[in-house]
Image (cartoon, rainbow, N blue to C red; front, side, top):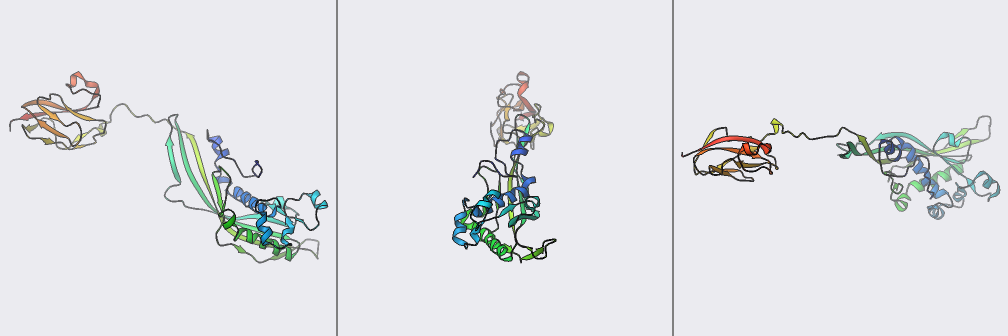
Length: 336
């Protein structure tokens, strides 16, 4: 296979900015083009005598079917075996004007597939102030692969070859998946639901004897791509100050509350962060556990402060170490 991808294909790369993302990754807007290009390459792999899947057609088609090939140029047609007939594979009408026999790949509908609660599968803010997001995009694309020749028999033969290509052979050849190495997209061929329509003829204008015979093979395939977006975003910085709303809240200890001597007093605290700890300003008055469950243990009568500090703070008086103080609550230890 050539290293140059066909129209609509891209090779993967590392996304560095929004422009690179669009050029290298974002294929959701090219879903129909990429799908038709993948189908075209897939058909060519059977009809081209040098195609990787040609052997499957050679063992399943009649000698008449093997006449239809895709690799001939105009000069080759003049010099080659007269039994070989050039088949034109086209994805757009302009590529196929006046060329027969041909296979025209026509899209006839696109349907979005709901992937669940959210198409966003991954998101992250980077230190450089950029936001990165990964999304999946899935579409159902209905195609009509139409065969056109100048005889009803040739149209029937070529369309039946295509029915074999999209019917039983994908299970053997590619597991119903068309993709490229390192690409962020794949096209899934249908496992069922392929319908070969009835043949029809169209008279050529100005020619009463010649007609173009057509027959369409209709099916729906799925297109899925993985989109990586990296966009500038406002840099997030956490405030140094602690919001009042986030300060620890003691549910059973009020200011100047009296605690009886000799009775451990459990403390119930809301909004106590893991990087906070408790201390008592005077350990001779009372002590407190340094980790949950929090328990205040009175030791003698007197006044003290229950401190909420950061781990770097020292268990000293507030005035000696104010920079690491989060909260202080005065209390008294009494005899009864």
